[in-house]
Length: 196
Length: 88
Image 1 (tube, helix red, strand yellow):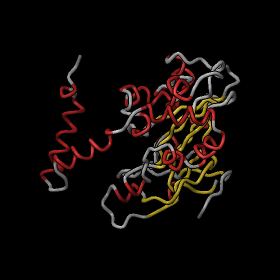
Image 2 (cartoon, rainbow over the protein chains, first blue to last red):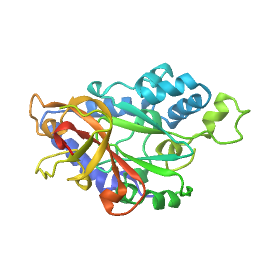
Image 3 (cartoon, each protein chain N blue to C red):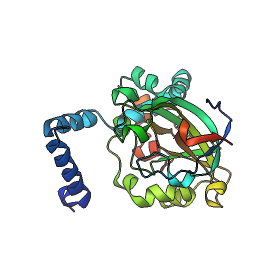
């Protein structure tokens, strides 16, 4: 396994940090504090709990699709707005007619606090360039084969909005408790590269 | 200029030598506004240290794959600031 520090990207990032620190614009402590705060409670469990609640609570589902930040707040997760170094959460729902998938072609934007650290492939040039061009083929490589009747809607995260997919509730889950439902939801499901 | 949902817009054909959040693959393309997201500082200005940056409405604009790539049956929705757009 490659050590993270050996990656050219990590070396470039450190060079950039050193230039910013030398210019007096930030400090190692400030960067560390920011990263600690960013990742402190970041987990796909957060997004999964919100998705599962939306499956059983119609009023919450309506709020989640209309105002993601408010839905996060009532779920106990803090998602500050863009002007407070947060983001605008926009949730897009899968149905039997539409499958949503998120990408950031410019970099790797993504709702970290609700999905946890992004997968390596989410940042890859291949995922970023191919998802907007041939999403059906990309999804098939993730093992998601959709009927031709299901339209694919790709969301490119180019602004201060961060997108999250609300997967469709799987059939045969009527008897499950909230916690069991949330356990079905994966990070890939919230990105759209898995059905749940 | 505000664009209600449903408005047909075209992305301006510009290729600045500074930072922009307009991905090149939608340059000059026509799409449909699906939502107005809010008014946010224009990254083209803030990335260049222009203070204060212009604050503009950002729109989610949906494009058809057939328009973007000449093939495909999907759609791609891209968030674009007001000054990237003209009414189509």
